Length: 351
Image 1 (cartoon, rainbow, N blue to C red):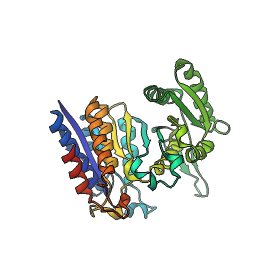
Image 2: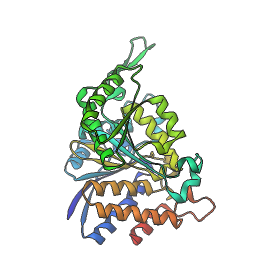
Image 3: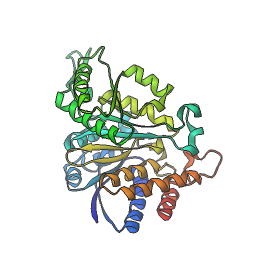
Image 4: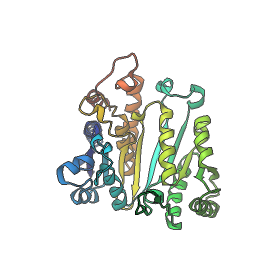
């Protein structure tokens, strides 16, 4: 089979880690008789430097014409340190989400037995933790009206949600829960926020249609505490945009390394697959960044194309690389640290 993959390396370490995922996908193609056509496009700071905007129309066109999008990272210190900058790399990410209709971010959080010692939490707390955070992506405070007063002494950010937006993300979360352990936690702040009360009303109505799934509700501050105290109690967690941004980053450190966790952003037009870490500009060009999260994002991409056996093969070879300590410096400890490119070569060769 032949598939078109829009390939957006982005900024910082993005090009290096995406290169390793491409190596693995090409090995998958060879092993399972598929052809992946990688069509490259610019985004983020790289796109600003090249064409003056962070998500050009040409990039959007390539995404629309593809079966899936493999994405690296966005961000550059020269924009982070300039509060007066009118155009920023992160605007490209928001624009991509909006134009592709990327309404849900899926973040699996899985611990790896050989790396439990890397977690900041005790082994008995994290061992066996395996859950998914489903975050709404196109609504809430990030996309609501915002601005400053004329005298610049006050500012506002509006948080808005429609019933349709809430129903859409909850349906996706219920579908994930149905394929896993049939438990869904709806996270909100319904004791304070009107938008959260809407979320809870919609969820309470919808849960009657999913009687085979156990639904519980949790305020976001309580959820933040319980993620650290009892991460194994969660199966699928669903929440709004800003809460999901914070909770998914909190959850990501449980594994001991940001370089291990993939994500998918599900859209109306196509879906985007990317590691959860940022562009890590300090490591750019040094061949030291961990490519595993990007490779596992490629596994999620394969799964979205119904290539389930192929996705499993990628996850299996990643597990073998961790067991055999074929890892980059962020998790190598006192053992040999492999280069980014060496890890990619090993994964491709051993798949």
